Structure formats: C-alpha cells, structure tokens
Image (cartoon, rainbow, N blue to C red; front, side, top):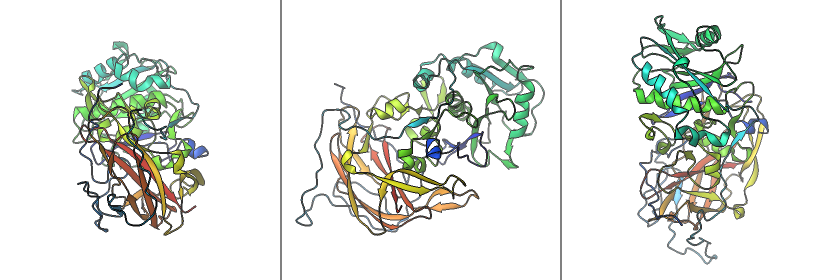
Length: 484
C-alpha cells in the first residue's frame, strides 16, 4: 500500500476549503497494488471556483474564452469553449447524439472504490468515549446509540456487508480525570491500548472505540497541531493490538455539527475499512480511474470519495437531528445515479466516456508522490505535446429533467498534488474545447484537447463538470492526459 505522511495506519480527515472534510487517507488502493420517473429539474448548485472535487483553484485569467452563444459564462484560464453554432469548414458535421428516454442513455464508465479483501464490520459495536467535563457528551452518546439502527446507516453501508451497529449505556465511557491540554496521536494510541478491556468495554473484532476530544484540547502528530493542519478527525488501528478506534477533535471554530459530520465519516470508514494498515478493505479507486485519485487528492476511502462534493456533505435531513455526511456508493455510481448516499430527491446529471471514446492505456510514475510506488497503468489519453485530439462523451441523467444541464471545464491551473516534502506539484496546461455546452440525456459532446505543457509527473489533469439547472446535485468527469 502507498501511505500518506509515512503512516501506514492512520486515515486522517482534513477540513477543506469549503468547510467539509478532506481526508489524508492511505492512498491509491488497488492502483498502488497494480496500481417512468416524474420529471424533475436536474439540479443546480452554487459551484465553487474551479469546481468541486480535488482541485478548487482560482481563475488564472490567462486566456480569453470564446462565448458559446448559449449564455454560459466559462471560467477563464486554459479552457476554451467553441461556438457550436457556426460551421468553420467543410468537415463532416460532428455527431451530437439525440435526446433519449432511456435513463441513463449510455453504459456508465465511473470509478469504483476497490474491495482489497480485508474484513468489514458485519455487526459493529460503537463504544463512545468522552470526558465528563464535555458539555456535548450526551449528544455524542446519543449519536452512537442511534446511528446503527438508522436508515442512514443502512443506506451507506449495506452494500459493503456492514450490518446495523449497536451501542447503548454499557458502551458509554466517561473519563472523569481532567483532559490534558494536548494529546499526541501516540498518547491516544496508548490510551486505547491501556483501557480496552479494563476501564473500557472489552474489545472484539466488531468494536469501534469512538473518542471525542473536548473543546480546547489540542491534537498533535509529530509535533504538529493537527487542527491547525486542518485535520477534522481520523480512524486507525492501535499499534500493538490492532484495536479499531476513531478520534474526533473539537477544533477551534468547530460547531457541534462539524464534529457530528466527522463522526459519521469516521464511523463509516472504520466499519468499511477497519484495518487500513494491516488488512485493507474498501480503499482506493480502481486502476482504470487514476484521474479520480487526482480529482480527490488521493483521498480514497468511502467517506473521502464524497467529502469534497458540496451536495454530499453536512445534511441534517438524512439522520435527524444530527448533521452527517453522505458516503460513496459503488452500486449507485455504476447505475448512473448519485455517487453518494443517501440520495437527494432530484435528478443526477453527468457525462461519461463512451466505447467510441477510445481511451488509451497510460503510464504515470508516482514516485514523486509516494516513493517506491513506481509507474502505474491507468486509462486516459496518451498524447504528444501540441498534438490535437477530439473524443466524444455522453450526456446522461438518471431520470427525466425539466431543463437542459450545462457542461463546462473549470479552470485547472494550479497544483494537482504535493510531494513528500509538502511542495506543490503544478498541473500542466492545455486548451480544451467543447462543441456543445448544454443538453440532455442521450446527447453527445465532442471534446478537443491540445496539450501545451506537461506537469513534472508527465500528465495534465482536468475535469468536465455537469451543472444542473436547479437543485444541488452535479456530476464530474475527471480526465488525464499523459505523455507516456
């Protein structure tokens, strides 16, 4: 396995730029190893600059953009949107498909989080650990007691062979000694090792110790304040006895809802990937979709895969009265529907590669990111510098919509990753032209790409975004161009 921060056990969750969780997880999973519906408006969201997902960078303003004539304002930068209404030469007219009443209109090419063969928790037991001085302790206990039998829990976990979790008063631990001003992650590991089965309920293969740090208590790792680093929590297994536990800090500026979101994220991942360092289960996108790793900044457990999507986070309607995070569903994504469950009651719109897209096998050397990982094979477009290539993508939705949705390419200048020293790795550059920027299920967009500079990794990353007319759910199609 490839690990982040040199730690093969922890899955650290980081507060992102949109106030949601952004994990530092184990890495690339399988890639490392081989590496008649009622019409509904198709959603519309307040789209962040640069788009949702792994890269949200400002507008570079470097290149003018051609107006498509459809009233769509595109991000400036290295993206160009062609005028689809004017014939510029005598070349054959591009195939733009036609609206379809089959939903989705195409077979969907979508990433899947890989089952690496490790166990999941079939009957989780949540032991909630709090300090008696914490005024939120009763809420944390109640969350642990009620999440397991909830429809929220079954929605996010049932496809991964995770059963209903249980808790209750015998599994409430209240630490009566005053909390320390600061805990290192190693201190908390010792806390678990020392108390499991003595002061705390005995550990079984199904147990998760959910530890909530009180407000004002600092959490550090290797001398660094994790709250200041943006860490919103993590789950792991103890160093010596492989006890499964999760840590939820209450960082400065956090509201109760922020801790609840972190808890829902960590309890899900601790159940679907309880032993990330020794026997990983669901972690890492499949080897054909390395582009999704860049989209998600190599944060690739089931909670990580949704945390940066604005429509998938911090929703109190799924598990009242708590604020929780939606989690990745392989089944729903593969069916051409919403990536993250529980579903929102609106249509999902996106684009997909088609058989005629003719994806190439590409090779990407990830040693700069993860020493020893070597060259990874995946799917993308192998192109030489300044070569121009056009490929089709299919527009689809999972139900009828009352309005067309918009497709664009957010600005993709800026960093795409960091090396082991924390230095930014900047993206390459390319011109990207779409011959169609609005449409409905069944229509086809022809994308033309010309790479103008490759990154130090020998790639260019961008994503194609589908922005619905109303609502909040929108889709993304990550793309990799490689010179190898």
